[in-house]
Image (cartoon, rainbow, N blue to C red; front, side, top):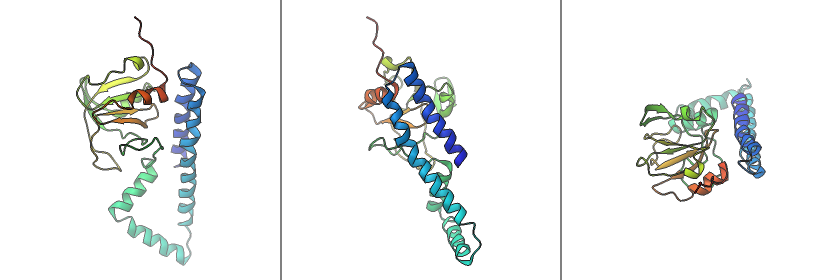
Length: 205
């Protein structure tokens, strides 16, 4: 857990530093690093302490370990621990909305005009992705097209969260976390694009 947490720390900070260094985003973007990652580190420390405690061999701990084992035979506790160990349970506080908002986007199979793809393949360029799961061409992000990829696609079942209503679109940050979810409307999209990826580029007349 600690290694993967460190990698996520680096990725979370890396794309934000790059945008600030290029002048795309203001310095205030860096403030989100502590707000997002400090609670994750605290949770990892707590989980590690619990795992170490369960390795003791006194009678009380052995009994506790057996009870935990019985709980993990049940679907809901097993799903909860799987999310905890994989990091898919992490949710940044980006406000109310769709269950996926603020969570790491699962690496789903999607169908695009160019054929089937995995979601994470779009992140290889370290660019954010606006995944349009509605009607092709329904979204226009011309002001951010120099730094955000727009992909028309279709999918949907989510690990950890299970079956949830498929949104119309999902804005994915370079670190794989969902910054905006649309349900048949563009409401909040321009604000999310500006907050995370800077103001729009003015079009030439």
